[in-house]
Image (cartoon, rainbow, N blue to C red):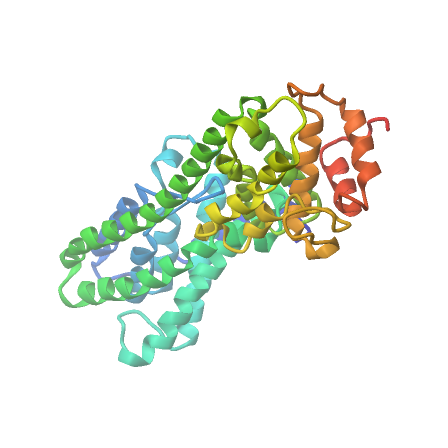
Length: 417
C-alpha cells in the first residue's frame, strides 16, 4: 500500500468484507449436532468469557484476546460451520454490546471473523482435517496450517482496514500492530488442541477446567502490553528530567517529535521504523543529563571547553538508550543527529547518506524548533525566517531532500522565503 489515506476505498473494502462475511454466516448453517447444542453453546460462552477482557494493541486503537484457543477448538470438535458462528458471535465484547463502538466497526469485526474462520476451516479440510480430531498425528500439518491461516487472514483483513483509513503502509501497520501477537496465536494452538481433546473424551464440562490456563495466557499477553506502556512512561520521565535541567527547552522534545514524525510519513518511512524514530526523537536530548548545569543554561557564548562538553551529549544519550530493546537499531538516530550533511558535524564527522536517515530527519526538525523558540541569549525566528535558513543550509548542514520533505509535511511550503 502507498501509505496515503483513502477513505472511499476503505469504505468500499469494509462494505465488501461485510457482505462476504454475512453471506458466509448464512451459508454456514450448523447441521444437526444430535443433541450437542448445549456443548456448542458452552464453547460459545467460554469464548465470550475470554473476550470479556481484551488486551489493547500497543499502537493502534485495537485489541486482541486469547479467545482464539476456544474458537480454534470449535473447529477441531465440530467443524467449519460451528467455528464460523463462534468466531463471529463469540467474540462480541462489552463495549460493542453497550453501543460504545460504531455499528460499522461492529459489523466489520463480525464479518471479517466469519471470513477468517471460513478460510481457516477450508485449509484445515484441504489438509485432511475434520470434526472429531480423527487422524492422530497426521493432523499436525492441518492444524498448523489452519492456525497460520487464521492469524494471517485475521491480521491481514484488519491491517488493510487500518492502512486504508489511516493512511499508513500496510506492512508497517502489520509490523507495529500485529507482528508481536503472532507467537501468541501459535502458543495458543496446542492449548486449543488440548481443549478439543478433553471436550471429546471427558465431555463439555471438562472444558471448564481450561478457564484458568486461558486467563494465565491472557495475563502474559497483558504483561507484554504493560511493558510497552512502562517503556513509554520511562521515556516521558526522562524527557521531564531533561526539561527540569533546562526549563527554556520545555516542550522542545514533543514538538521536535511531531515535526520529525510528519516528515517521516511524508518520506513513506515504514510504520515500524517510524515508531522507533518517534521514541528516539523524544529522547534525542537525553544525553544533556550528563552536561553540567552551568554549561546547559549559560546565557552567553560557550567557551571552547564548554562547547566540547556540550558536543558529548549525543554520545552520552546513545550510551543511555543503547540497551533498550524496543529501539534497537535506531540508536544511531540519536547519536548522529548533530552530524552535518557535508561532514563538518559531530561526533563522528559522518557525511551524506552515511548519516542514518532518522538522524537527518531529527537534525532538521531539531534545528527548526530551536530557531523558532526564544532563548535567554536570542529571540525567536519567525517560521518564514527559519524555513529560509533551512533552505540556505541545505546541502551543507542538512540533507536537501529532508529539508523539502520537512517543509511540505509540516505545512510550511506556503510561507514566504
